[in-house]
Length: 231
Image 1 (cartoon, rainbow, N blue to C red):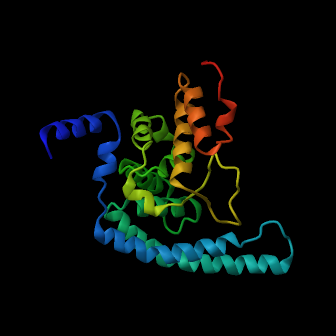
Image 2: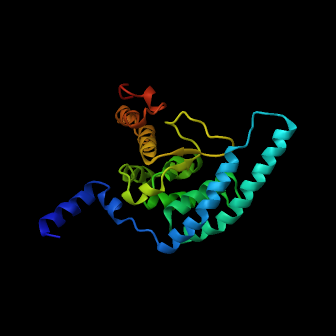
Image 3: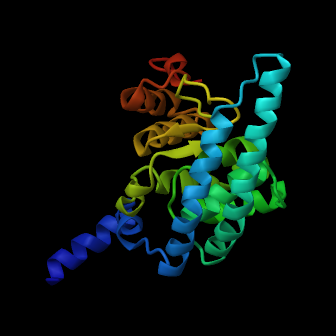
């Protein structure tokens, strides 16, 4: 790389998320373990989405229990694989494992989940920021959290193939989760969520961040702040 180009690249790294986007590396062993877990996660999600909470009929409730048992069996296979991948610092595996700990909890605690989420976000993976906001309150008050939000505003290309990703509580999307499954969102949807969260944290720029979230995917929650004066 010629010297002027090198200087320009380093300056871009200082001023933006370019460095993060270009230097994300995923351990091949962790990737292999994550891919082994993925079919089981998908099968568990399919069964969870078919659970019907609305009907009190005994046959439906029996069907729900059977679906829950099938999902649990798949998670029992997936979790050890995710735990191994997470130990190898695979950011997506850390995120998916944390979600399981928080929602279905086969052996994990909320504290362990938050540690995984913070690590995953620290690797530049955006989805954990949303879950942290609703489950890891001690970290949301730390200055590191605001810095992390800013660092994931520009999605790292390395992660694009991993989307869509599940979520527990999306502010911008109106669609509810199916059954006992998750909501699902694209990288653009998560970018809107990040702008929403930054607006929550920064009153001075709330309207500006809200407009960006609305521009991305029509963020329903952010619409209430668009065009409002600073307060």
